[in-house]
Image (cartoon, rainbow over all chains, first blue to last red; front, side, top):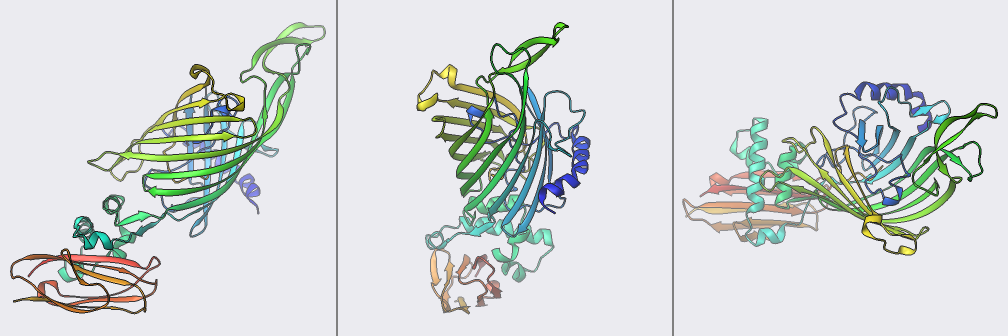
Length: 394
Length: 89
């Protein structure tokens, strides 16, 4: 049974789960396309989404096949999504995301039907290789330099571990090494060890993804058209990426995306009145795009840096910044973006309550020409999913 | 006068097993050493191992009594381990 079959078979379960959980998850939501370039802001209604807390960053264990349900809100539209993540090997994770955008209250959401993807929905399949589990650094120089910061942090963590485990014998506690306790540390304890650089994340991650989003356009081919025409198609994205974790709060990534999607001459539709029938006169109005949407390809090269900032005293994440730059070689444009996440976390550094922020973008005109700031800039506020800076799968 | 008597072993032929007493290197490679201590003074002993996964290492301190330990471990996948404790001679 392939993934489409699997999703089709269980689509009612997924949809039911989504609908059941929507009220409870209004406060949350899946992210959207973190590296969304400004060129796509208006046209690409089906964005991508992500999961997961800032520090729940290594290989997450998925108890349910549906690992995340979310609702995302931003100006003008909302988006529901369901994510299925399946670890297929120790360092390998397969993910599938179904998304549906809507502009009204979500009375019913059906990302999949017997005909395949429904209008406004998107499916994303990704395979990610990731080994971010903590690895001990080479601390010889620090030890030889008489630096006791590692010992002090480790001793505090070990004492907490022994207390938690009810170990009281002094010699037994002395024999607790990092290796013997590392698999049973709390996030707060790990943070203590990150702070003194006893351990670091494994730096490497990579992956590929493919997304398919169904789009529908009402349009008039030219000004002589008497009635609007319709076009339905599927936008496709294929992406490969490679990333380096600089720390547990910082990751740098480069990616290439091949896009094949429909585009319109103008970003926004216009109101069009037309006759219901040849004898009934003017009777209907519809928002339409001027000109026939055309299928275009784009090659996008992106560089992205994801950085979390924490409170110095508590070490808890409070702010996430994601600057990125995108080179669109086919349309000869450059897009720059800055996404700001306001993070709310609990004592374990896991997200709680509303997560959201703002996204700002600037896009050049064709031939990489800079345009006046007021023309090239875009901005939006969103309420979205917790940011996981290591998740590039969607 | 008390002394720190320590022996370290590493099963593989290559790798690092470093033992520090405060800021002094007691053992830079597997072996034995004896270091005089001052009664009533506090010390920190630390060790760092970097060898092949699956290798065994031993840290054995027979004196002083306050620092006695007989540790034998097999290195996991990343081949590294760290430990240490504070004691008063």
